[in-house]
Amino acid sequence: MERIDAALLRYLTDAIWQPILILIAAGVADLLVRRAGPHYRYILWVAALLLCVVTPAIPAKFPAVLKGAAVISVDVQRAIGGGSARRAAGWISAAYCFHVFYLWFRLWANLRNVRQLRNTAEPFAQGVSVSDSVSTPVTFGVRHPFIVLPRQFADTANKETLDAVIAHEQGHWQRNDYAWNVALLIVTAPVRFHPAVRAAYRQMAAMRELATDELASATTPGYALRLVDAARLLTQRPDANAVVGLGLFDCDRLEERVMKLTNPKPVLPTWAARILTAAMSVALTVGAVYMTNYTAFAQQAEKVGPNVTAPKLIYKVEPSYEPSAKEDKIEGPVTLTLIVTKEGIADQIVVKKSLDPRLDEKAIEAVKQWRFKPGQKNGEDVNVMASIQINFRLL
Image (cartoon, rainbow, N blue to C red; front, top):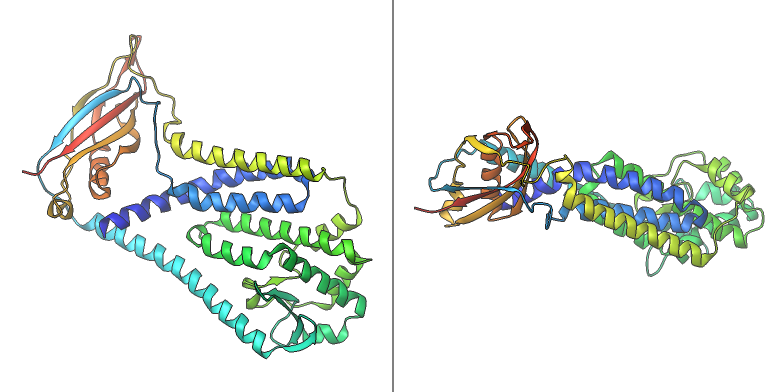
């Protein structure tokens, strides 16, 4: 159980800061692909959201940065340990898992509501129904999609407005937006606690609506005017079913949508838009992986060499042997990479070679308390990269 708690805490810690950097990069990339059109900007934001989920799960690796690092080896052959940190880790992991499973349960409950809505809504036209249970036009379904209109809206809107609204919702069918939306709600649940991720999701939804507007306006004369008419008639907020359904006004950016339709700007040719979007997506992915692998060594540090002396250990706290790991008879080395600062403390500690999450954590806890005589370059104290190997052995 401790192993699961340690893995969850590592993921959660990385999921706090990594999405911020990813989404800042996504915002810059979005500006660069603006002329590609909303469909390609939508793809970019989907890629950014997926990276926010995947990147914290990538283990950090430092294949070459530690050449010339000072090497320190320590043997641990005794077993001591307390349970307060373990209990705290357990509670944090439990709260995090509860949040994720709550989001999945809420999604499941909404999908059940969709099934009930499909059974109770009254037919209005082919593939279109009306119901008092929705307050905005909404699209549901994957294999057999259907549109539900508010009954009052269907009774009061003129034919042109109804046609425009239905054309918009049918655009979601063509784009398979409902399936992608449900999939993203499932996949992003582990990071949706993060305000930056929720903001990125809203931006993705805005691009989705703009892209659907483009499809609908191509087949519906006066579509922008009909969109405004629909907004005037639909004064209520979308209901809970719109969490998984795709509503006409999922994003609060009606003015921007109308301006895009009435004052269209030149867009790149399809081939150029695809190449540019692919390039930006690849750049985001490479940047996320690079950030995961090398951010821990962002602080400038020297390597041991002719002009740089290695730091010397002057105070050591023995790492404790996790009792449960001892019971499991786990022994062997844990290799840590770190920077010994010019103040003589261990900073930016990363597990380079793991033995067991329980013993990895014990090694890190101890090394944080160690003190060093700093390494020097030309007689001055400097930050120096170091590699520490801690050997856990059973007596």
